[in-house]
Length: 220
Image (tube, rainbow, N blue to C red; front, side, top):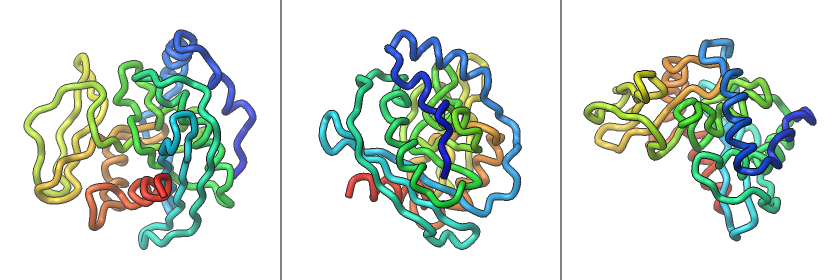
């Protein structure tokens, strides 16, 4: 997959510059559907086997059967410090490197992290989507920001995640009696379609297959 040189621009920012850049890029996030038919979906995740080393994984799968088409892992040094709310600046260089190894450009990318459900509306899924002009979804295990009502407990149920009066994502139950996931649109997809795509990929486990497998591969 070809990664434009401009994608790395700004990732070497200072924390203050990074926050300013998030506010600028958040205005470019598209939360309506321009994704088309999704035949392939890539899951990406990252682990840190050493404090200053990132190991990123990408798993490309076909739909509707969820067959694995490609799997890749890369390691690279980490330059950006750990700062809550700025994790995309720490993690995206390795994720861009691993996506570069894909032979085919995916129709959709699922990130283990937030999309629009972010204090400055630019979690890692939204940041990646804007940089690559790709449809992306944030699928997180925990909440970063926002409030919600009673937690859903049956597969397919979801409730809105709201921050300052704005719907920023959803709590989605992917299995009966299992803790829900925090799903938010990343870029070029609506929240309802993001939920639909996550459910298409969550057949047996709490996590959708692309990010579940990417998580395992990144920690291998």
